[in-house]
Each structure stands twice: as C-alpha cells, then as structure tokens.
Length: 129
Image 1 (cartoon, one colour):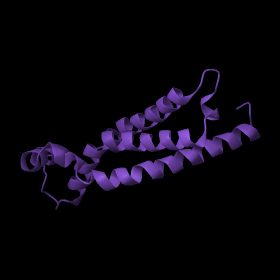
Image 2: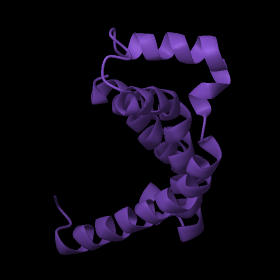
Image 3: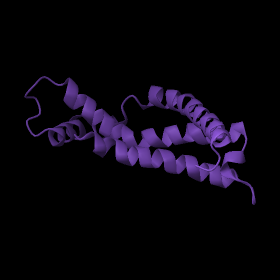
Image 4: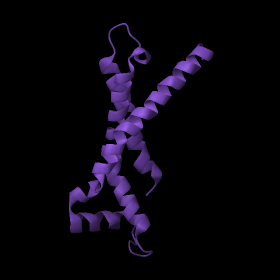
C-alpha cells in the first residue's frame, strides 16, 4: 500500500482539525497565533486523535501485510482487507486503537506547542517572511 494512501488523508485531517479548532477559539479581531497555550494543547491533541481516526484502518492493513509471511497475500492489501473483514469483522480495522489514542493526545499537543513556539521565534527573527 503506498504510504500516500495512508498519510495524505490522515495528515489532511490532522492539520484541518488543528486549524479548525484554533479558529473556533479565536475571538473576533484576534489572530490564531495569539490564542493561549491551553487552546493549543487542546487543538493539537484533538488533531492527533482525528489523524488516527482516519489513518488507523490503513495502518492496521499495512502492518498486517508487512508482518505476514511472504506469499500470504498474493494480491496485496486487497487480500489483507478481505481476510480481515471476513475473519474478524470491521472492528478489526481499529485493533489497538486505545493505546494509540492515549498516546495521540499528549504527543500531538506537545508537537503543536513546539510548532507554535518555533513560529513565534521565527516571526520575531524574520517578521516579514
């Protein structure tokens, strides 16, 4: 499975969710980079969760394909999907979701705090770029 099929939709959801939540909490006349740290933490954490909601099924399929003995799935990801749905049902596409989600919120909140700090620094050093 091409990585683009996994990461493009998940990353799109990731950044869209972050920007949307920021815009919801931005007061009229305020810039999104002027919101508080708690809003950044919330927006970043929820962006991480949204990323995994979209990306988890493709990641499960990719992992199953990669860990199967060679020749198990001659038609690639399509065979993995058919077998998984037939044997375990649609819920299996989210197998392992709990630890992923528990990690997603704090990890992505921290990521966006770092992002915002870097952006403030860069805007101070080079404000017209």
